[in-house]
Image 1 (cartoon, rainbow, N blue to C red):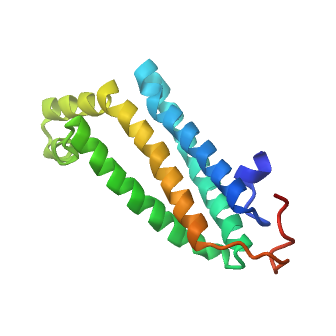
Image 2 (cartoon, helix red, strand yellow; image 1 turned 135 degrees about the vertical axis):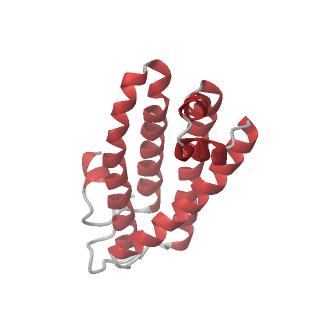
Length: 164
């Protein structure tokens, strides 16, 4: 499991990639929901950096499995960002949160407006749908990445065919 999420060397097949992406998505969703328990737990969101590294390691290994360079992970990140942005906009519309107002209040210097906007985004009415949207984003992205990165059925320069 640790090798799956933390090592960028070698190859992983489509099912292992999907499994790793779902693990990352669920851990990310839990981290996003921690401020609902206690605002102090929001600091654990820094673990998101470890998840980002894991995302890159998974993408590199999936690219290697398709016989491509690990640098292809950059296209994976663009796809994940695009899908997540679309899902985020949908979640914001469903929950009635105007992300533009949140950023506008933060940069306006109006402390009361910024606090009100922050409270809206930190509420369960936004965080829970946002966490579910994150899981959906990662699952859709993993599906698309697997679809575009066909597995190299023979040994390649990155190693032998991964076991199923």
